[in-house]
Image (cartoon, rainbow over all chains, first blue to last red; front, side):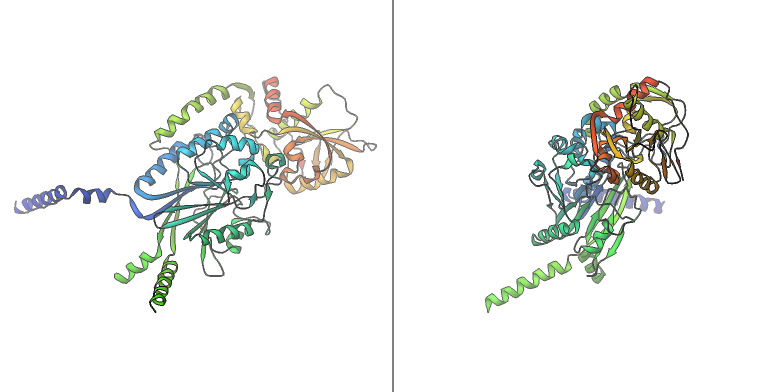
Length: 300
Length: 232
Ligand SMILES: [Zn+2]
C-alpha cells in the first residue's frame, strides 16, 4: 500500500513538475536542433516524379517526389539548418519530361525548396532554349564551374558557385559537369565550351576560400569512377584537388552504402557520396563541428 | 604597443577559428518510400498526372512475347532496327545497300507480353532523336566492325555481325558506298560512334519514336524476329 502510494506520488510529482514547467522550457524541448547542419542530396532523379511501379524488379513502389517531400519536411521540422542539393540529371526518363518539357520537374523541385543543383548531361536534352523555358519555373540556384557558357543565355542563370550561410556554416557549393561531347547532340549545347574540371574546381575553391567559406561542397556530375584512368571522375577529383569537404556525385547511378573517404596529401579527408538514381534514396549528411566533441572529451 | 597587442589578439582569434573549425560528417541515406505523402506536392502534381494518364494510356499494339533489350542482341533490338529500315526503304529501290545501326543504350526499356500503350513507347525511346541517312564508304565498314566488337552488340538491320565481320547480304564487289540509317545523336558521334563524323549525311525531320509507334500501330500484333544478329 505504502509502495503503491509512493509510486503514485512519484508519478504525480513528475506529472505536476511537467505541468509547472515554464512555457519557454517546454517549448525548448520541442525546438529544432540548431547545432547540427543536415545536408540532404539527390542525383539522377530522371523525371521520376511518381514512385517506381509495383512490379519494378529492384525498387518496387520506391522513390517518387511526394514521398521524398514528406521525408525532407520531417528533417526540416527537426533541424534548423537543412541544405537540399541535387547533382544533376533531374530531366529525362519518364513521359512527364516528354510531355511537359521539364517544367513540372522545376516546379516541384521549387516546392521542395532545393537550394542548389548542378547540371547533368540529360539536362541539355531539350537544348539551351528548352532548358531556359523550364528554368523560369525554378526558384533555386544552378551551379557549374567547368562549362564556359560564353555568350549563351545560360550564362545568366548558371554560376560557378553559390554561397549559403546556415548557422555557423558558410557553405560554398560549386558544380562540375561531364564533357558533353558524345553524350549530347552538339546543337543542344552550341556556344558552351568544356573546360578542365580540376582547374575549374581549383579556381572555384580559391574564390570560396577567399570569401571565408568554412564548408566546401562539390556537386559533381562527372561520375564516380571509370576504367579509363584518365577520364575525369569524382575519385580522381578527390585525389587531385585539395580543400573540398564533400563531393556529392551523380551520372554513374552508383548506389553507395557507405561514403568513399579519400585522404589527400595534406592529410585532409574528402568524402564522396552518391545515391543511385530515380530518387529511390535520399542522401543524408549530418554535419557537426569537431571542436565541440574535443571540448566534451576534456570536460568529461 | 597598444596596436601591436590588438594585432596579436586578432591574429590569435582568427587562427583559433580556422584551426578549430573541422566539420565531421555522418553520411547515410534514407530509402524513399511512400508513408505520409506531402499534400502540397500531391496537389500540385495531380493535374499533370491526370493529363499524362489520359494521353499516354492510349492502346498502340500487342506484343505476343516479352520484349527485351539485351546485348548482344534481342527481339526488341531487332524490331526497332527493322522498323526504322522498313519505314525508310519501303517501296523504294536503292542502288546501294541500306543497313540500320542504332544504339542499345538509347533504347531504355523492356516490356512484358501483352498490350502496349503510348507510355510504353515513350519509355522505350524517351529521347527526341531524329532519323539520319549516312553515306558511308565501304572502306569504313571496318570502323563499325571494330566498334561492334568493343561494344558487344547494338540494334542492327539488313546485316548480321559474325566473328568480327559485318555481313551485308546485298553488298556487291562493285559497291563503293552503303547507306547507314541511324539517329542524329549517333551521326554526331554520340556513344563514341566517331566513325560517322565527317561523312555525307541527309537529315530527316522524323523522330525515331514516331517510327516505332507508327510501325507498332500498323502491325497491331508486333512482328518479331528472335534471331540474334550478333555472333562472336
Ligand atoms: Zn543519369
